[in-house]
Image (cartoon, rainbow, N blue to C red):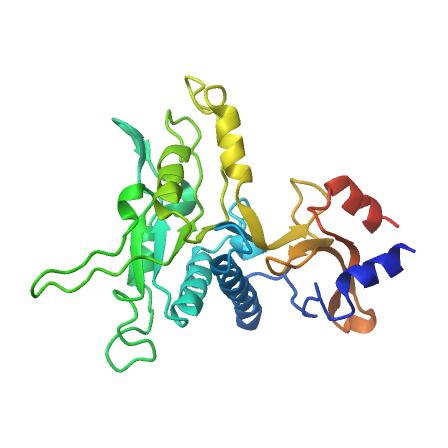
Amino acid sequence: GKMIQMGVQLGGKGVGKLHDDMYLNQVPHNRYVRQYFYEMAAEAALEATIICSNKQFTNRMKITALFPEMNPSMDSYRIGTLLELSRAMAMRLAEQNLRVRVCVQGSMGVGIFTGVPKQLNGVSTLLQRMDWESEPGEPNEGMVGDYINFGFVGKDHVVDFKKGEGDIPDTQQDDVFIIICPQNMVGLESSIYGPLSEMVDAAGDRPVILLNPDLTDKVSAQGQQSVRGRQQRLDFSDSFETIYQFQNIYFSGTSYFPILGSVVKLGPLEPWVAHQRRDLVDNGGEVYLPIYSSETVPESEVIMTTLSK
């Protein structure tokens, strides 16, 4: 009965299906595997932006891509994969004549107690120095600086349309915002909530896409991130709807191999699907078999119970 129900939910159209032979246990990943994830995330961002423009979806969106090279808690984390995924999303949107601003949070804290999260160290500089193929004669000539721009997290980095005067051309507004890994930091008496919420408010109804956000409160000396305004921060975090997610399932939170399966949501209007990873006989490869489907985020207890059957 459960399999029939799952078949009805998936619609028999390949919804929730994943490629075979991804071998995510092997790092660094194969280039085609990375490209596969880039394409899925970029397509989900474009679809969400389109339905948002039709007032059929919220403008507050988030993408969670936590395959091994994108998981900062693992030794396999590769900052280049994060940058390439961000570039793929921005390029896909810019190809539709949308102006995209890619943002990274700046230094947080007060006085000498300032810094950026380790995961984001150097990302802002690397993002602008990487190859966007935007130089004269290249495929994306002139795209960076016109359709793709960079910034930090804060309301001052939201650009609105401004009529030019005389020889000064019009200033075109940003259409979509991609914010890379916004997060709080342990020990700092400041939260990303302030500048991020101000930026979202300044963006109005324009899409704001958070890539791998971690908006949970962290331990701080004076408890600023654990007591004052906590419910307001939780409500703000919950206001972002998942438009794409890929996250592997492991035996426990401290053991990252072998991979048991995955939990995915492949688009803003797609169901949540849990998969079990299975090895084929005689080293014939591996497959991800759908074992559970839901319209809401499946609970971990349900997933582990389903995997054990």
